[in-house]
Image 1: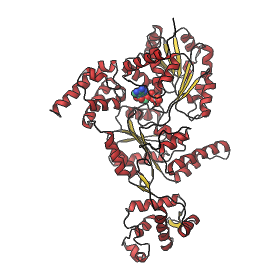
Image 2: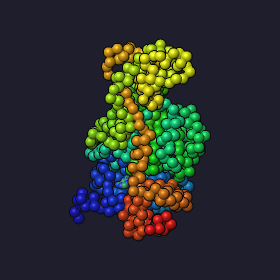
Image 3: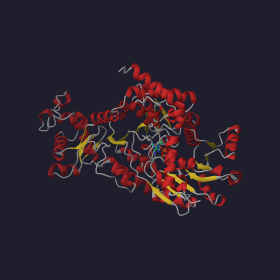
Image 4: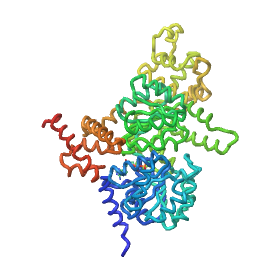
Length: 609
Ligand code: ADP
């Protein structure tokens, strides 16, 4: 028999993906990656979080004869994936320490009878002699190692158990091994290839850009108010707020709850049970917002996280990419806002600098500098992020970051405005703070200003036309750019040497104007163009009910992308439903009637035309 050609294999994969997942098109790199598995050629696939790595081994697992073994680091991850696959009608199972004997027996039987297509298992269990011996007697199609960076001590999530996987090759010599990760550094990639003993492995690196994520960086002023303005655009939607410390987690969660939002704190100081419960409540949409330290993250496969806010700057762009990447895995628009203050870098230095480990400290400092540059540079955020990972963005502008959306704009006359501010600070005797200086410049007739006779200064009212928040922002920006500094108990403004030079001789300075709220709202409205939002909400309700009956997270039933497509196209026949992304055969059979009923009810009641 002749081997099938790559084209034939690709068609086969496409048919399977359409049949079971209801997806018509491959995402970037998926077809290449799947093809390696079909051809039993070792491979390493690098795609960002949400890039669609799971499908890269799941579709071939279904398309090939035999059992695919998937190594996964966390029970919660395994469970989530198995639930999702089962809901598609794919026979998948896992073996882990939290299972009852009955459940394990059933999975073992399914393997023996050759029915199981995917087996999820932890690395430590896989390398047990008993397990390997058992698998040697089965028809194993290939081994997939998920979250493969856990094998590298250069990675940020090193798990010593992964190291034992190096013995796999001895026991399953003829079976191809395929690794998957979102970690982009060269060193980690090389480590994965060596440690797993991959043979002539194809290293497939996908595009790191996530065009559906809208990146913003704001200088942190009134953190709670800034957070609330993001929340206002995401009523009832899921999101994560990351903080640097546990103390901040507790404080922010409490304040938001007090203001009527529904949030839950999550950090390493809580018990295992509390954390497990919180994670589950988030996945099953009983709690929309989690306020967390970085302890929250791995194992969150929830695809419809609509926003991620960083209330403090992360320690590196790698971390930022990973944490913000938890938003919008379903490919729909999601918002990533970073609230930054120069003091955040000091907090990180305090946490990471250790004279006993100069190399580690130097690496941490380098990461921190890159992160700070991202926060302060006036350049497309998408471009900055992908360049950090050694790629180039296609096109000059992304249209989904604060810079390209012109939410922050450089003033034409930055130097003149800066000189007005610096001049006022000098004329006020360098004895007043930010708010007072802004008031003088805006020509306020406040009591203190009159008492100090500062309404007689030549700088009084020079920026009368400008909104107060802008003037205050510019003063803050001059502090960040080290033209001004704050001193003493009252944080009085004082000129630095650079500040004096700018005032006397001019020079280089950039001041930005923000029009965030308005731009952000315009952007949100555009996302819903042509989609009946009320119908979408009805469908969400239906999804929650179906999920609760089956004890599954709602996103396992349908993704937001599917519900939005239904709300846009309002299908009336099973055939029309079949054409919608995410509706495969099993979903059509199980939930098609319920969806059509809901749409029909909507059409009759709300739209009687
Ligand atoms: P990763 O493991 O890389 O973080 P996932 O495999 O979880 O990403 O995929 C993220 C989301 O995208 C999932 O909801 C998945 O079903 C969906 N997805 C993956 N591939 C496709 C595709 N080709 N078309 C449509 N949706 C896809």
